[in-house]
Image (cartoon, rainbow, N blue to C red):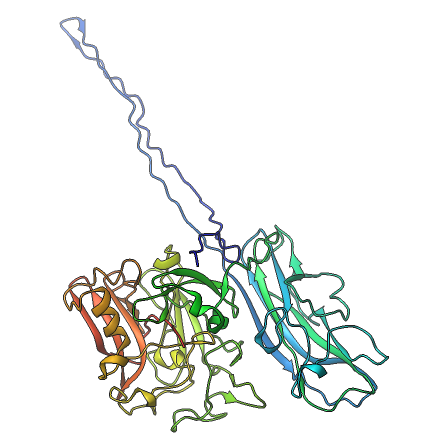
Amino acid sequence: MSQSNQTNSYTDFYYHFFRNILVVSLPLLVISALILGFAIPHSSARVSSSDSLAISVPSSCTLASSVDEAHSASIINGTYRSDIGTTTLSTFCNDKNGYSVYAIGDSLNSEGNNVLASNINNNYDIPSGTATSGYTSNWAMKLALKAGDTSPTPPTIISPFDSYSTVPATWTKVATIPSSTTDMEKGSNFTTTYATYISPTQAAGTYIGQVKYLLTHPSAAEPDTSYFIMQEVANWKNDLDEEESVQAIDIRDGKIYWVTKLKDGNIWMTQNLDFDISTNTTLNSQTTDLNVIYNNGQYQEYSDGYTKPGDIIYWTPANTATTINFTGTTVTNWINSNTKPYSANKTDSTETGHASLGNYYNWTATIASNNSSSLTQDTLSDISKNPKNSICPKGWRLPTISSVADKDEFRKLNNTYNNGSTSSDASLITSPLWFVRSGNVNSTNPLSFGARGDYLSSTVNSSLTYTLRFSSDSVNPANNSGKDLGFSVRCVAR
């Protein structure tokens, strides 16, 4: 498999430069002196200096969904039913080139599969269609502008998806905002709902379907299917050669990451996780690394934000959850806490690709929890007791640190690529690992930014957690770090 070097159509950055030239001019000053009746020539020169300022503003585009009404119904044979469930799709993009939203059927986590899959066998699957009578069951989708949305630039719903239409089997544009109309302060919202006709001969059973959405910008961009899907890593991880790097898209927000199959046999993100958390986004086990709602007392349904109404696990971040944007050397509103999930984003950073800082997460947010204060059992010698959930995409997990050598993943990387050095991070911050000296954040300021790296694991050390910590003169693959501070995250494929 060859390395992907194509331009990322999902996250192209458009930089706007503002240049001020300061010209300091000295007025021509002529001084003549008369000595013994002779004029002495005086020479003068105009002197100027210039100074310039360049500011880059990276594009920030997001797509999030929240379920307003459950997408489920019990329907008697021979019946047509519309308006089944409502989901709000929220978009924001500061790119004046506009953006588009695409959709594709994704039943059974199979991209392009647009059936309602039967729990009996696929002979009973319900295809997508718009018939309201007859002897063939079908299901359809519809998009609409959200009622009461005050966005000054709502998206245009692309026909025929403004009425009930067949769920697309290929990536298809369903909504768009043209260039020069995007609003810098407010996002836009539209809704999706479904309809189905159940024929008189349809077998009783449970039928489940899924639609995947993707935002691209600029508005003319087409989804680039040459990129892998993070959440589908199980389908492609065995195709990678050792130390082969590819780019994969996280379908939760459309961000692209470099991932590499390293010599330890694992596929690692070789770029820091950059996923925002907020109280407005409920995560689920179809897109996020959510595996349990109760695990040795570590998670509790409802009290920790977890629900499992069916086969899907949901985690709703607490109403205090937030992603804090900061610039320079001051972090405002970050609270050192084990009882609130926080992340932070240094928005004036210009690093991209492997060098991207990504987000900083406290350990509570990292393990997809609303309160990690009760997790105090040291798990260094038994990582089976580590938290089973994380903020990573589905199919990925947090690295482990362990007293059992074969399970100590940060130490194995340091041994393999850095000769086990504890005095220099030289081989950790270059190809193929590309760890970043991103420092960490606390309630007052970023610490050691540019001088030190701190990367979280899932391993517990009483009131602390274990991290990989390194700098130009020190490497500690099992450092004791506070759970309440903000650190970087790299995920490993399960």
